[in-house]
Length: 272
Length: 315
Image (cartoon, rainbow over all chains, first blue to last red; front, side, top):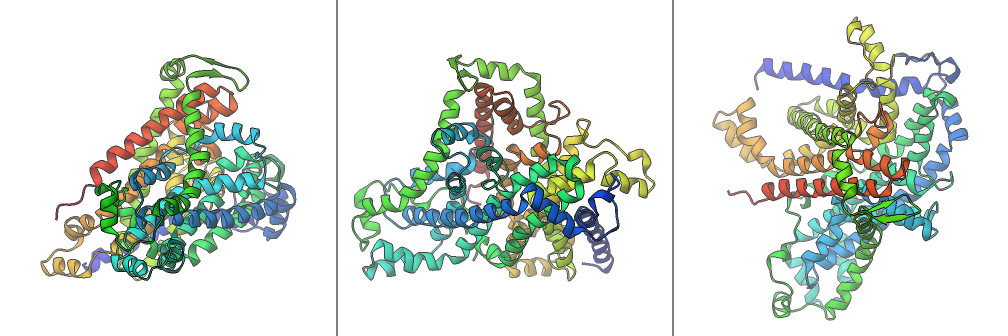
């Protein structure tokens, strides 16, 4: 690269980054504005330091805190269970001499292709009939089912890539299937399992659709659904409160995302 | 590993329901494979079938009925014919098409440009941080920020006035097609980070020797990109484009939260039309018809795209 083109590139990238940071900046600055002082138009510089007042309002009046606890349960347990169940199935279709592995692959994988909205109304009806509507079990169950297919895709791909010697060595030892799975294949798939977990944790945390449809009370609703209520209630609480709530609700995914990033890239890397 | 491979297990190539062959491949396998296999598969299959496939089958069934949630009567293909003549449905298809094209050009194109542009740059990490940060911010939070940016006299208008560009001040979310374009821009702000990450992973898997050889041959800048980098990125590009097509066909959250499909139904996408028919109007049959149509589009699009792209490269 010549000196000029490098300089041009640097300028273009700096401008792009600045443009990209504008909405994030606005989010933070206005989350600091005192609700009652909010003028109706967003401000560009902090006018007061009321972030914690706003967060308290969001937590007290819109159940953001309860929503976050619910979401934490769904994301950790849901994604964990989904990744484990998906790795069992991956082991079955890649390592075990199963009949029709392709068929079983598609039976599970189809879950990533169907548009989510297509299950929504029958699930709602079924949930109402089975008394699962607005329960923690119900939410966990649907999140596990929804996140299995993609986790399966990631883990299965990883297991397909495991060297043959690994599989054969284990079977020559005369290890049973369960021992083979827990002692050989699961530990060898750590990076793929982590990547799948982070993906699915983030997905469940950010889900709005199923939270809105399958739950109604505040001790069940995930945080994205409570946040949506807050957005709809602009007139009652004001934008600063909604922004403060959004800011806090984004922290867990930001933390998980940036702390797991290394696993993330490795688990996805075709050559790893 | 995974995402770059065709979504078909390698066992697919072998006629594996032939028991002699299966045992020839694995002579030392532990016994009772059918039973053990069932035990390993059962949880995943049961959950997916029970909670995803069966409800979807019911949606197909329901699309042939006039159903208000209480009474149901067989109407054959009436829901489908009614859907195709409804002008709101045409608008919805058009918007969904805008989303597919828009998200291919913006997040995917920009993601590729930023990944390639910052890859070897010292300050690249800073630029990448700015772009990747919004990806970690939740969808609902994004909607709050952008409602804020795009509302009348909101952030964008303030910014334009600040820069003395008053004539550009608009009602961003209240007129079509501007609202759809702006929602795609908002999605770009959030989604580009994911594309950057995936392309960076792809870039890291290019053997350095390939790039060095090309540079020794005198390739640089654009030529290096088109002749070497881009072709080497093909597997990852396929994944990113595939995810983007499916995601944009199913786009829902952003539209629901930013315009709720409005004004009227002007900015509705297919997922939103389906949602409105089912949950707002309680016309379960019509909603199911839209859902089935959307599914067919997603399946056909991903199949057509993947079938062409996932053929092994001849090299």
